[in-house]
Amino acid sequence: MIIRPRRLRRTRVLRDMVRETSVSPKDLIYPLFVKPGKGLKDPIPSMPGQYQFTVDTLVQEAKEAWGLGIPAVILFGIPDTKDPTGSRSWAPDGIVQEAVAALKDSNPDMIVITDVCMCEYTDHGHCGVIKDGDVDNDATLELLAKQAVSHARAGADLVAPSDMMDGRVGAIRQALDEEGFNNTGILSYAVKYASAFYGPFREAADSAPQFGDRSSYQMDPANALEAIKEAELDLEEGADMIMVKPAMAYLDIVRAVREICLVPVAAYNVSGEYAMVKAAEEKGWIDGKRVMMEVLTGIKRAGADLILTYFAKDAARTLS
Image (cartoon, rainbow, N blue to C red; front, top):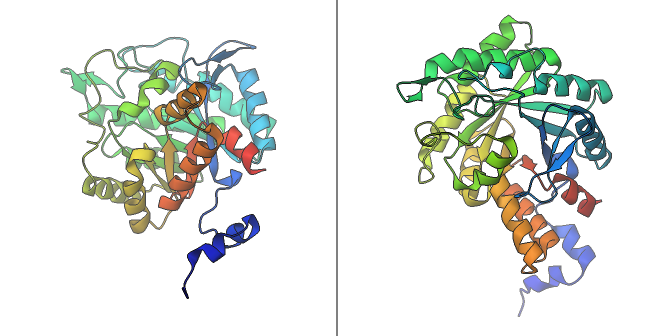
């Protein structure tokens, strides 16, 4: 045989030389949950190795992540109280606002991203204002903009709207600019599917809807062309980065979005994807570390520049 592909697989060093895709800690964004209190680090049962932090313990966790080479975190808040409009989401003394300020005070260089949505803050668990039994898209835009501005005022580097309301990127961009935060970026959850993979997150963030589901505003998992439409709309409205969520079952979507975007593309390796690997590892059915790296490499190979993942610290240690 003249052509033998195995020649380039013969040794580890040779394999490393010709490797087409690589994952680095700098590609990773670490999701963190923060709640009121002090000195707490409460385990999330469905997500082994993940916790609900108070601001002081969150700062320590972020320092550890930074020390491993992880450049960014994204924050999800668990408020002290909830109401129909999620008013604690934009309060100056809200939990995310407090956490952002503490993180930037502790390490100004770390990139702090904030999730912008209403579901953690509303007593009904939906991502916006309820009218006639459904989420009122346009009435929600003003509240999302207020939330984003409050995060920027606290020091957030990027805001990440995850609600899937039509027009929210434009509304947030306008509000940020009017308040003088023209340098605050938007990482848009442009392509977010109504997925069953979010289950553990809803426990972690106490954000399960109290009635119905989110299919009227999150995307149908069967749709691909719609993903391109959503990404293009958010780019037109001023998104600085585009996200696809979830990742593992949507690698074709990551690739399709990558091909039409001239901005960085992120993919969210979500809670259910993380929990499945952890559960199988605990059973002894898989090599968890190898599967973790295979998953992250697959997401990167599909075209993601950045990966939001609960594996961030474990992956960074493996890569060191």
